Length: 407
Image (cartoon, rainbow, N blue to C red):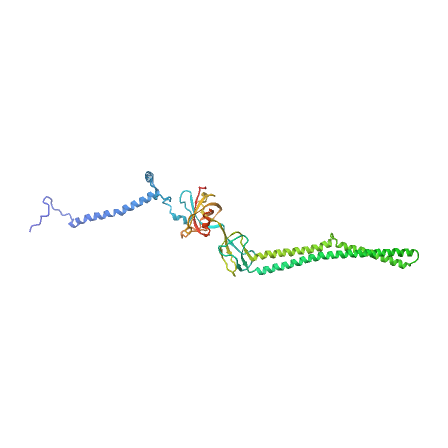
């Protein structure tokens, strides 16, 4: 039987190459698959080049942007390499655009919140009465609360008042006694003078009779003794009268002692009245009651009984990172934003702290650095923004300081 040579070329000799027809049919498919692997590689290369080019912006890309007028980031003012969320991360600060310093802050009344405590020396007194409610406006010196030691202190005042009245009466009695003694001494002196005058007349008469031999020596001696006694009585009453004279040291000493006792009683009353003020909790300054920390019958704690703040002028305490504080100056314009605020608030920098400390305002980011070194900056809100911030004491906010652009 002859071999079938109908499918072979008459001009070419047959050779055994080892390649079958099936291998020849599969070869085009293998080439196609190898080319498909180039597509992801091309896309990855294109993406990496775009990111690197946009981040580093080589000279060629810059020339392209300058020529076409295009800007990276579709015209946004935020640099592509700076994420907005960096504002609330560990350093609390980021430069959003040239000249801006952004920090975390909290809205506070002018002078911050005052925790009103009980008066010094109140001891373990408890709250007997609260005379204010939250949101009440108070003036300096207004009574905010009354303590339960009020009856005891009122009793001490009443006792001091009674002692004062006793001392006043004692002084009046001493003066009246001196006046009466003075009048009595004057009357005694007048009587002694009259007696002495009569005794001297009798002595003169008896002496004349004795010289004429009409009377006896005994009668003369008796007259002399009576006249002498009367003279001594005059001297004694004069000495007694001198004790009650205005310039007398004895009289002045009696009155001085009574007056000293009176002054001591007045001092005791003043001290009792001052102690009475320990039963009242008064407002140290004008402001609004922000919170009440105790109820009637409770003993006030160390946190105070009432939080008070002057909300007529609201401020913002911003904590600026230490490396950025050198760019902040008094008078720099400021904008304040927070989710709870209906609109942006505006103000100016009015105070810059002189001490670098540890931050106290932290964000909700769990990766935030809670040990950053910051400087307190006080921002005073303008007349339009202050009323909007009044209901939000201690609200955390984002503070943007337009550093270097003082109006």
